[in-house]
Length: 111
Length: 120
Image 1 (cartoon, rainbow over the protein chains, first blue to last red):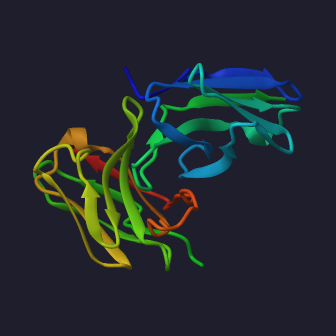
Image 2: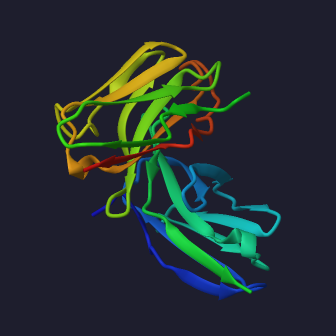
């Protein structure tokens, strides 16, 4: 079993739709959580950190459920430019700066 | 700041040849990571340096792979001899890790544009 699991998708949604991705992690010692975005043939880039109380950045909302060990990302009013792969990322306690990446969920927003 | 710089951007080589990938981290960052990404296996951490010292190389596939960081501004990943199954995109990333006495958390990892390696 992978340490960080995601549905690979693709999620095909129309412009303006709301879409949600979930991610589960297996290591209960996981300490910090992030969503990275990777455009086609580009490098991953940090989208947002995920805080225990949940956090919002514009159209994006991230939530963490430690008891169930899952993380979610909600995108409202999706844009064509949101089309990308979204990587769920976890940092374990005492792992220095090492991050563990999920396989990614591919989102395609259609006009 | 130019960001993380990797070279070459593309490399096509024949099986058995030596391949050297290069990385220049962001100035001031003290952690450097080498990753490999394929469709089948996703993004895998190969090796992690902190203050130029290898901390975790458990992701290095086998002895054909080696990585060095001779100074804070340069790192190499070498494959010798290369095999077709090494074909992948290799990313270098850097970040800043505060000292152990700091209460601050992990800093963002910044990725380079990657090297697309094809071994025929």
